[in-house]
Length: 348
Image 1 (cartoon, one colour):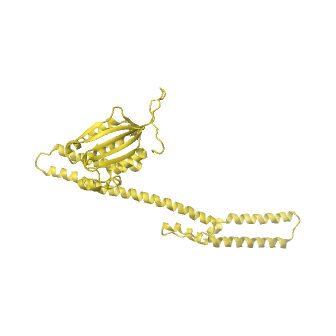
Image 2 (cartoon, rainbow, N blue to C red):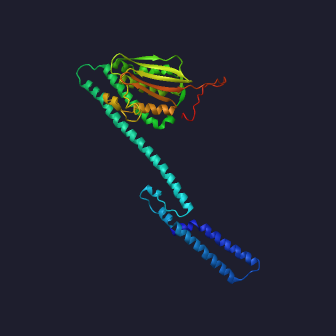
Image 3 (cartoon, helix red, strand yellow):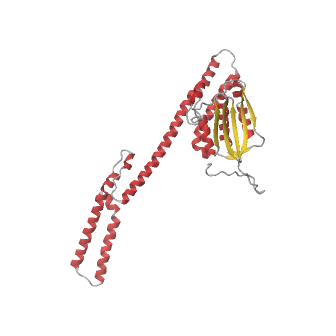
């Protein structure tokens, strides 16, 4: 401890020594050459310097003791033992660092906990299609290819949800904003899920005008639309119902909606359906919900700068909408070959 103090104030001691020598030299050149007075001045200045350093060491003793000890817990930085403005500022700085550290730890813990819960829920959900496939294999009759396709589709949707959940942490690195033909994209999603419609006896109705262009990321918004479609079909229990894919324009915005004729969402659940792992009353009816679909959709829309809106009536159906901001495109010179679409920092 004392060595650390001396190393810290070594420059002060050297300065003090040179200052005394300079004063002695000045008096010597001025003709004042009394040796006793010089020795007396050196002794007095030494005593004053030692007294000053001693007092300073006593004031900093607790601080040196604190930083030289091996801490057993990080909360030690919250202890306030400062007796000087400098040390008080150091402790304040360490407390700010501690708060930042706590936020980082809490964020990391929440992220890991979310991954763990999602994986546990997903593994439990994937047991159903695997069990069905095993039963089909064990039966001696010819395997129904349509039933196998339905179960494999469920596995694919589950795998895609896991991949999207994992990529969400590196969203900005896996994002490419471009102009997307909304009708073409919706048609593609509906075609990919045609067996889901057939198996549940639900029919899609696409009411989107041609060349309806939106500014977004194709891959991420594809997943969001597929999630809306899956929920719409999954919670439509009656046969021969329809799922409507519609667009409207309002104040330079394109509102894309997926409207079903299903059971609707209870009023007590509507504010929590976008929370992670919330299955609600409807999720308990099907037994297949992970509670992550609308949560991921909400997270993706927020990061893309889109607004997601949910409206529902119990017994009549649910409408999930995305509000896209239309962005004006400027004509570029003939030498340019790309169309650049801008997004505000807030959207990112």
